[in-house]
Length: 128
Length: 273
Image (cartoon, rainbow over the protein chains, first blue to last red):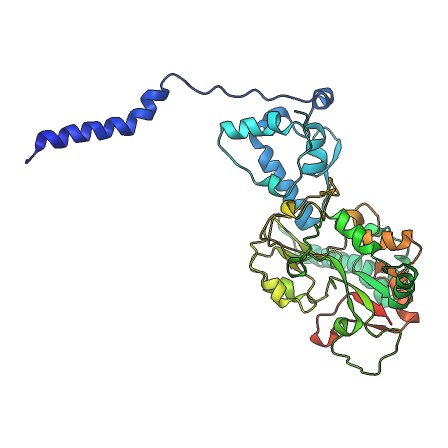
């Protein structure tokens, strides 16, 4: 092997550069953000579905609402506890969860998702 | 457990009796009875929504004001967050005005009645029975609702190819060349005007949807409400499938024309001239 030493040194430096982000961030796991509830959401106690389902699959529910409202014209959702809700992200969901930055955004940032709901749906104005 | 011959014949006979007892039987023995008994159904139960536009009434209202009357247009565009771009080339139109000659181009008449010559006519989506826009849409983003015939848009699905705009013979569809939130502020000081209704993103096509969100609540479309509010009553909205409905009564009494009926799109908008 010609110039073996140089190649091996180069490989080690290259590998080091490649892995440097792992060493740099080692032991510093980003803390999962804690969602904040508005007084109105706290008062209501329950969402349209159980908390665990909403936490894991709210996007599935929203997608189902979107499909049934827009394509099938079914505008009301019957929750498991018998209550009826108007299926609307902008009107029903955001009425309680009017704190977008603390309720939606920080968690979406944490898991690195960028839903494009807000390209069209209007967010409530937040007090800064 | 199997079904023997005797059992099968019994079931078949009962099923046939049940079948005759339903709507089919009423149609055979008393035609028209069922249709008549559907009178007075709530607004949410229409089978084929249609609109009758009374041009003389509209023009009479136009003559009252200094700059004509744009109440229906303002009400619609406020309700649906339609911005004013200040440029007709990129304008978003849900409901708009065009001269009589341009609205009905296949009936040219150089000696037309003076009262109609170059007069503005209210135009909106015709909600065709055979909508060409629906046929060409590659993603089925635009579709005709089976239950009431409204030609809808699913903005989530639209990819902005504009086939539908090319297919629509009435120019009822508009493309968002820019984000409506970036429309000139001086023309849209209080935009968004309706915070309960979404906006659209850049690159989707939009159009009139007969206010499906209001109809589902049992209310009339925003333009009709606005016209009734100023007591002009030039717009009548109702169910074409119901022979006793307000629109059918009006159509029986008055002579009406439709835009480009020769194309076979079967528009559901009728104009009293």
